[in-house]
Every structure is written in C-alpha cells, then in structure tokens.
Amino acid sequence: MKVMKFGGTSVGSAQRIKDVAKLVTERGKNIIVLSAMSGTTNTLVEISDYLYKKNTDGAKETVNGLEQKYNRTIDELFSTQEYKDKAMKEVKACFNYIRSFTKDIFTLFEEKEILAQGELMSTALMNLYLQEQGINSELLPALDYMRTDKNAEPDTQYIKQKLTALLEKHKDADIYITQGYICRNAYGEVDNLQRGGSDYSASLIGSAINAEEIEIWTDIDGMHNNDPRFVEGTEPVSELHFEEAAELAYFGAKILHPTCVLPAKLNNIPVRLLNTMQPDAKGTLIHNASSTRTIKAVAAKDNITAIKIKSGRMLLAYGFLRKVFEIFESYQTPIDMIATSEVGVSVTIDNERNLQNIVDDLKKFGTVTVDNDMVIICVVGDLEWQNCGFEAKVMEALKDVPVRMISYGGSNYNISVLVQKEDKVKALNALSDHLFKNK
Ligand code: ASP
Ligand code: MG
Image (cartoon, rainbow, N blue to C red; front, side, top):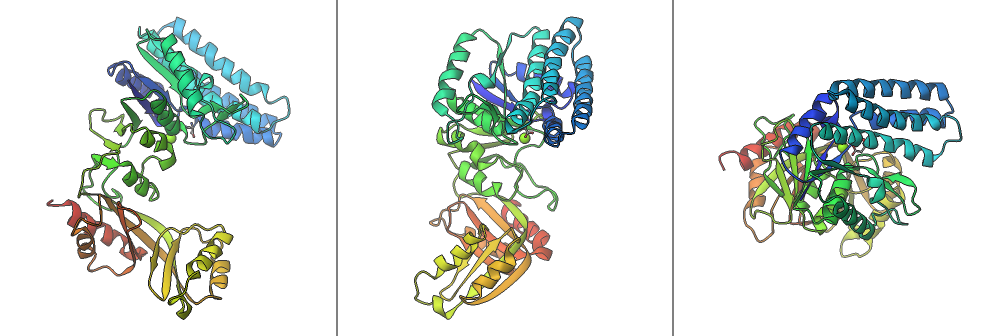
C-alpha cells in the first residue's frame, strides 16, 4: 500500500477534486492524505485572529464568505441531490462549530479546533465524491489515530497501533481518505503538526504502515536540477538521497522540509514528488540509496552576509572558535557556512537583525570585515571525498566568477561557494553548462 498526499492547490476547486479522485481511483487501494482546500487554512487563521481581537462581526463575515465558497464547490462537485445534501450537512456542521466560538472566550485551544476544520471538510468532500462515483471509500479520522506525546513529538507507537486497527476494521474498503496536518496532543485535545504539516502526516502514516512508497503530489514536476527562474532548460532530478534533499531544503528548493521526511528516512520508505498536472511523469524519488559519483542539482540562496574575523591570536590557539560562535549564539543567529584558515575564519548568516551587535562583540577578538548581498551557491550530489574530480569540475565552471568562500567536507553531499549577488545568474548558468550539459 502507498500513501498519496495532495496539497491544498491539488484539491483547491471542484474540478481539482474530481481530477484527484480520478487519479487515485486508477491507482488502487492506497491511503490518500489531504490538505485543506487552498486558502482555507489562511482564512481560518484570519477568523481566529478576529476572535482573539473580540471582533465577532469580522469573524462572522469571514466565516460566511468561506461557507459560500464551500457551498458553491459542493454544487459543482456532486451531481446527485442525495450527495449534495450529505455534503451540505457535513460542511454546515463544521461552519456552525466554527460559529460556536464567537460566543465565548477564545484561546489557543479554540483556535486549534477552528484550524482543524479545513482538513475535515476537504476529506469529507473527497470521501463523499468517491462514494457518489460508486467507490467504497473509507474515511480514516486523523483525530482517532494521529497523536503527539508530552514533548509534542509524534507518538509513533500509538499512531501505528491505532491506524493498524482502523485499517483492519475497514479492510474491505477500496480506498482510504484521511486528513493531513491535524492530530491530538498528549491530553487528547485537538492540535496540529504546524503549518504545512500535511507532508509530515504523510511521512508518519507511511512509516506507521510500512508503506511501499510515500507520494507527495503537488503542481510542479519534482525537484529541478537548477533554478528555472534563472537557468533555461533545467530538468527534474530523477532521484535524490535523503541527505541530498536535506541539503537542498535550506535553499528553499521546492522540496520537503527535512523534519517532515525524517520518519520516512528512518524507516527507509521512499518518498516520491509527483505532479498532479502531469501524473505520468516520473517526478523525483527521494530514498536512502544514492546513485554514486553524480552531481544532482545546484541551488542558490540570496541575502547572505559574510563575516570575516582575522586574528593573530587564532594561530595555534584553542578556544578561539568557541568564543566566536558564542557571540552568534548569544544573539540567536544561526551560522550557515564556514571557512577557516590558521589566522581567520569566515562565516555566513542569513539573518541580519543583530549584525551590528555581533560585529561589535567580534571586534574584541580580531579584525572584522562584513560583506553584504552575497549568495550561497550549493552543488549537491554524491561527493564522497575519495571520488576524484568533482571539486575541480565545480571550480572550473566558476573560473570567471569571483568566489568569496568555499566550503566542502561538512557532508559527503555538498560543496558550497559564496559569490556576490551580481554574479549569481552567471554562476548558476556556468555550473549548469559544466555539470549537466553534454554529460
Ligand atoms: N492546511 C495546512 C496549511 O495550510 C496544512 C498543509 O497544507 O500542509 O498549513
Ligand atoms: Mg503544503
């Protein structure tokens, strides 16, 4: 059995719900995890915001607007009056529940109840639509099996046990529909796995049932080998190691967040990124096996600041780096890239909020230079140090670009270089030409 997760845009209208229904019924008995219809969670956040501010009129108006949208979707989605009525009843119950919170005090608990309604509605609609099509679809309520423990971490034992029992109880179903994102906490209260958490749900569900594969369906065809906004002719990467995916995630590559795929990685369950608009394209497979000796992708991150600290005191000294790092820690600023020499160290940050304070403190230890508007370019692949030549290839590609920092050896999966903003597009294209063309 597979887990197939569809994001908000994939179920964002009656037509999109029909398309997903067709796609999933053609693929057999799997667990379908759904996000809320696109825009819904944001609107529920807005409603909660009005309620926190005790603006009941604002809340009610926004609830009514959202309800009308759902009513129109129902009208378009179902063809029989019987199912229109069933769907209206479900959706109306959700909206009345939301309205019930306009009367009393409003806290985080109530907000979480409201936020849960989006996924409850999208799954109710999909389940009923499949049933109207004559399919024996079964709704698995996430609130009955998805749970976090006292540390707000998923309670994997509980999830496995409850989900297995639910599947056993409904073993005759043709297909299972369930909610992403929502769960209960250790005290049984309605909670969620944070915004965008449906991918996490899919990964947890896949791990709990030891799924054959976890499929994440969006509307892009997997992960591209370079940034399509700046480089022509980029191609989807056919496979990535989980570690490579984690490196790319920092670069905002449209890919899953590493914490979301962690359960899949640990349980060795492949994750595949697929495109609802082109369902037969291969997409990107993320797994624990890596094709060796290949460079897979290039990505860039803007708005990077490089800070160099040079000091004679660093020579043959110990504890110097600790002092430097402690300064960044005390201003809660993460360091991303580092390069060191015997007498100096360069680091990068992407959060300039405390830059002045950091620089002031660093000056106690050495001469400090700051370069703003830099870009990290990261090359990802199977780059084990024993393999010869890939460093040379990267540097050869960048021979006409001034490079401020180079970092390799932190992992076997990436080389990062720091360049000026004005050289970013040139660097990305040069790397594409050298690494991916005429292979
Ligand atoms: N609906 C939730 C959100 O918009 C969860 C998700 O889509 O993954 O954040
Ligand atoms: Mg999402």
